[in-house]
Length: 67
Picture 1 (cartoon, rainbow, N blue to C red):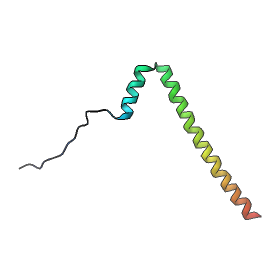
Picture 2: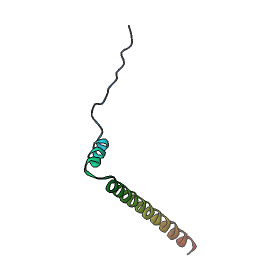
Picture 3: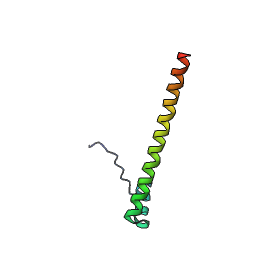
Picture 4: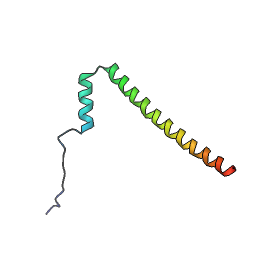
């Protein structure tokens, strides 16, 4: 007797795949690229803000040690 293997094939696309499909239907290539570039810029701004806060904490800690 062979061992039973459980294989599940997901016939439904993921939420992300569905959104990308809708996006490709509704938006032209240039609009899609612009939206993705804007989102990348938002993420980069958030990263820079986080880095600024961390640097501020380090500088404040260094200042309080020297006082």
